[in-house]
Length: 273
Image (cartoon, rainbow, N blue to C red; front, side, top):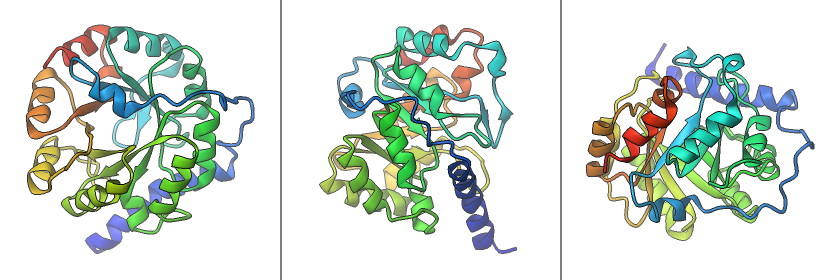
């Protein structure tokens, strides 16, 4: 099997999980309605942060690790509250039920108890998911550029961007290559509310290399964009490395969720600068 075919297959598997969840009605619940929620700016939260801006992630499972945390042994609401009290400027919540053990219910329930920006972390392929993001009180969504580059979503990234902005939500455009970063920077010239996420994880192989952030930012100017380094961040030394490479904020999931003391782990990371 050629490398190109393997790449398409890996991305298609991610997209197929979202289409499966859509068919199952995972994003259709009308139980929550945060239509009166005024979106909180993740961009502003990053710019005004006096320490390392951490977006910590509530992540129970992943394709690369399997189960990370046994959901029956934690209280997700308490985890979210602990994250904010410890210094997280934002919380990312997985809402994809397949492979990630996420749900829109988890995000909606966290919305009730915290006042920081919430990122709906999902493989977005349909406007139905964007509608759900608004309904459950999200402030920001993730659009994975590779999904759109391979025509695996129902519409173009430009169409989804316009639709999301009409909902009042911000967007993190996730990239993994120099070409994708260049295109995201160009796209964001007219979309000042967009942020750029550099995923240190290769979605084809699932391998992680935090040097990806440095390599891309060395090869392509980020301009005036806010750049978030995502995946594989384990300690304060790596936060310092990524900051020096040009990253403005840091999305940390597994290392926080696996910690025996979430608050202490977050404090260790955000005090690194």
